[in-house]
Image (cartoon, rainbow, N blue to C red; front, top):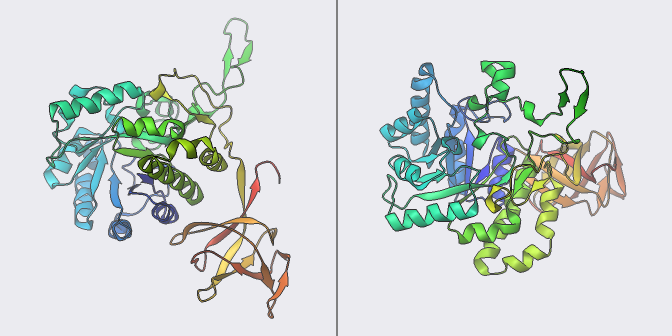
Length: 413
């Protein structure tokens, strides 16, 4: 299940092989502040794009709600059903009731903090898929899945309840995201449980001795900011345990991030199915790909392998091994010969450059500039400077207005 915080990320997720996509509309979702959320009027198009690629479309309505918002929430659920959305993701009890009233399939969000089989059995009256709390060990998850099978616990659809877990992306220091820090510091408009977190936990803090006034940094680490979760090294154990849905976090991330992470996990799942996972994992290529895009360092075991929280991020900034630098925009695409024309707006584009092409419909296309042609006569060149129109071959269709970015090794520019 892939994140979509923008049209470009939606296209990137589908192109990279997502089985399902989750997204927010308006402000009643947990990325109300950080993602470029869609409008209610976009619902039909989002669902159509997903279904056209054989993927499911899930609307997140997973914040806590107030009385004044209940009618709006109900209206949004009706619009989602009319648009053909496959399920609603929520945790507020009012959302659970609204989904059942409107006949809309529900997936229980991690904000419900489900940690045991009894809770699964209770929520099965509302939800066909339940996201377990992020703090459970793999043994606990396996026990819950076995309990579902043994006890025949089914959801509203009549099928056995499926279990979803977080597989990759940012972690919150609070228990499954139930945090009050941003609310306490900045007031109701910055509540994490309303999707408006300012992430003060990602900052550096000092410990002050109130008697002497002496200040100490805490070992140079951000002690409320965990490293990002990465389950790839033990993904086979998770799938062997019977987990049905792997949630990839990242609705606030760019299309190239979504493209890379979804593609890697898609390949890993397929490798688990055909038995080639151990050998491909050992090559290290998947981890090298994940390290290229945004991350705060990886906590590769997480709670799933019984590790205590304490693998803290050293910085709130990305530790990606690659950076992308804006270079220009696509002005033409010649479909017959597979060539894109770009107007270089910053720096220079050179033969040999690795580039990303990002766009709302294109998603994210990564390629290497193998040749360049500039000028009215299209003469060959080794580089195109700022203000120049240049053309080069691309491996798939791109579109006018797509943004071109040069890829460089982090710290090399």
